[in-house]
Amino acid sequence: MAAAPFLPYGRQLIEDDDLAAVAEALRADYLTTGPTVDAFERAFAERVGAAHAVACNSGTAALHLAAMALDLKAGDWLVVPSLTFLATANAARYVGADVQFADVDPDTGLLTDVTLVAALDRARRAGRNVKAVSPVHLAGRTAPLAAIAEVARDLPILEDACHALGTTYDGASGRPARVGDGRYGTLATFSFHPVKTIAVGEGGMITTNDDDLAARMRIARNHGMVREPQHMRDRAAAFDADGTPRSWYYEMHEFGFNYRLADVLCALGISQLRKLDRFTARRRELTRLYDEALAPLAPLVRPVPPVPDCDPALHLYAVLIAFDEIPIPRQQLMARLRERGIGTQVHYIPVHRQPYYRDLYGDDLSLPGADAYYSRELSLPLFPAMSDGDVARVVDALTDVVKRQ
Image 1: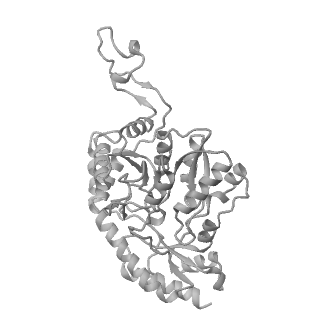
Image 2: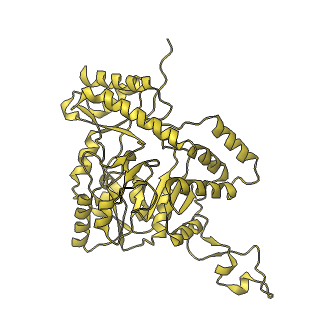
Image 3: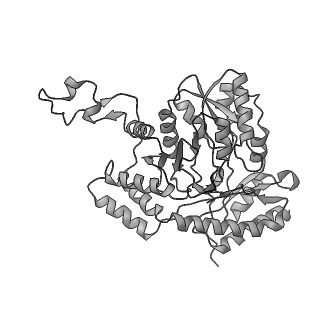
């Protein structure tokens, strides 16, 4: 009998219509900086309910562009939950700002209004100038944005929504809000890495309802170049004597980067975006199957609990395992599962414990919620191409490893 296929913790689902969309883009006039980029941005903005969407070449680039647009700089501090990927915190460092790490709920891994208050209090006592807050929608569940916005007051909110495309939640008005629609956040960033809800290979997007921020990010992603005649500062260089704009002329008013997303990848993004409802529905069904199948393993293994008023399209299926109560450490458990063709991962090592940040800020910061979540978390396979039987296979293997030592 052939061995069952390996199940990674996440992977893309590319279908024939995706391949056709890419092939059509390859035959078009533009491979980059063409009309397909604009089309992807318009479709994405409409899908999440934002005024603007700005495409770029990764979720990390999206965070960097957002930090630049908010004009974070040396002397400023960005509040970031420690339980996140490195890029959320690093975005502040890219622009010379600093990171005020916040604790998280120990069971969901999410920034809360309570942990935000504690982080702001620490910053105030240290005389730090906090300029923005960056909640992370971990695994697809939303941080409590209404409560966070109330605590943040006038501070801009930069949502790291790289895990949460397709998630909805209830806003203060009672109308379901879509992650990225800007109801509470100033900016929201997304990722199209292969393990995310839709994939283009590498790619990112920033959504906002602020016209000026969107314009700044579009310029910054393209080397900082400005080509519109009405914005030229050196008019003698930009125009002929009769006032005709010189077609080749451009200026750089602010520093920028090459963070463009190619048309061919945007074509894949448009095709994938059309399937978002199907992908998220399947993720929700797989989540339900996992929840039911794992119930007998409680309390040794239990899913991350639901977040009130949130209908997540989970990017990760995370469980919390009482490793101090089972006779096998996490690394050995992961290795045993891998031997059975099941891939797992840990999301994430608290960023405040990284050597770079400990060297920068000292190693005396205590964030027990982040440490508690990290010490128990394990991400199981979750992607739309999985079958119902795949879920049963994962849970059977996990049960065997946990209970039959």
